[in-house]
Amino acid sequence: MILTVLLVLLFVIALIYFVTGIHGLLVNIGGNGNSFLAKLRLGLRAIETETGHLPVQVTKLNETLTNTGAGLKVVNTHLEGTIQAALKQKVI
Image 1 (cartoon, helix red, strand yellow):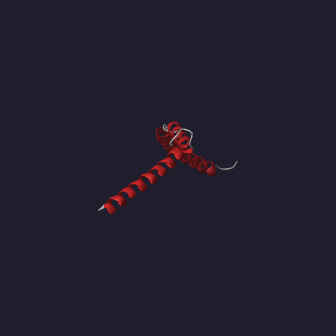
Image 2 (cartoon, one colour; image 1 turned 45 degrees about the horizontal axis):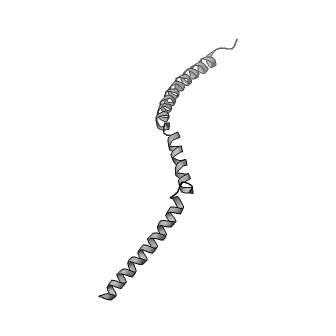
Image 3 (spheres, rainbow, N blue to C red; image 1 turned 45 degrees about the vertical axis):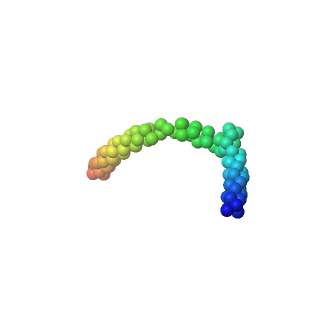
């Protein structure tokens, strides 16, 4: 019984020791505002803010380009007709 209590106590002490060590490493990685992780997080937020309007604009651009493509098909058809008419003319 006493051995079990001592082993559990030893396990809890080891667990506290290692969890404290892991916590210290995590604080060094990203816990303060000067860490590389904090700077990366700040940069990613800035990118997210600056590019947040893109989905709406891309949808509008896609619609505009689709309409432009349809218009160019009409122009192509007219140019084909013009070329055919020019080829059919007699040379004087």
